[in-house]
Length: 370
Ligand code: NAP
Image 1 (cartoon, rainbow, N blue to C red):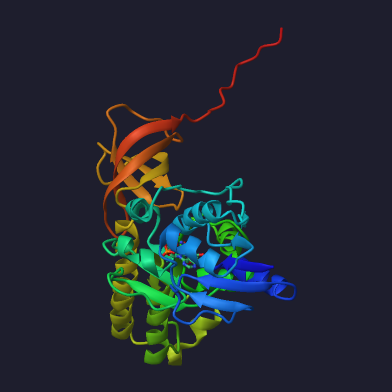
Image 2: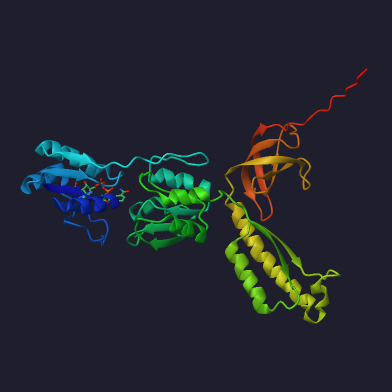
């Protein structure tokens, strides 16, 4: 049987491998990828020239059957294949992957287009893994976020200003996807719902969304060299902690470090290192907080702000301080949605959206038994 297999997908490649033993298979590629993987059977590359072009090709090649194994988002080709096969009365099989569906715990934002994805992505996080292919990158070019872009061929402008490109092609593995998400500290995944095996979804599901990381750092521990300190700075700059509690070493009696007097770091050196460290810590804090402006955060209300008693203070799920106003008093322990409107390195400023849950205090009822 002469089979035309419309490809460009892993399934098409696998199916071609199965069919070649018994059939005369031509695999057709659109030509989007510069050097496609070797394929079994005869390979032709490039469009057919619409429905009529494909119909003519089918007639000219005496095709007995067509298998449309194109990507679920290649809708034009799928429509053309259906029309052309109907025209020349050649049977058509559409290889369709079931779409993915969300599972419990997933946080999906379904969008109708790449442009719509670009509009919502900035509000979701600031390290975005884009797996929608290089041809759709222009939609994300104006978005001020860092992008990890994975594509088979290098992308061409317009592209996002802050971007790392990984040139790779599937199929991908769960271990590989995990490592990629971890290495690049990805917090948002943008993907087409193309169905099929999805290790990237499995890897994303394992990660804790919107995790904030804090740490404690001491400078001037006895024996700390300039080089040690530079390495600390590098780690802190790379880790981009949400916040860090920073201290200058002070000896505590009874500890080994307190005995290391001959290795104490001079105080002025400690102060200088401390200030440099603080600048790096605060830079990351400011950046992380600025990225939250515009978001609505769930906060637990802690009471009046210590800075300004006319404001309330709450903590987000990341333990970030938010100061916000409320016309009505809100009981401590209430949960409220607060829109972040401004940020500093150590706190956020917000506007109350609404109280979502009141605290459930137990009331003791006096009981007298006569
Ligand atoms: P599309 O919008 O549906 O098709 C546009 C035009 O490209 C078609 O009208 C056709 O040109 C030509 N074409 C598409 N697939 C072809 C094929 N297999 N063989 C020969 N010509 C083809 O397609 P697309 O979204 O640009 O995708 C192009 C290819 O990349 C497809 O083969 C698809 O399987 C693969 N792919 C697409 C995506 C995606 O997200 N869209 C992802 C992974 C792989 P003529 O009208 O001139 O015949």
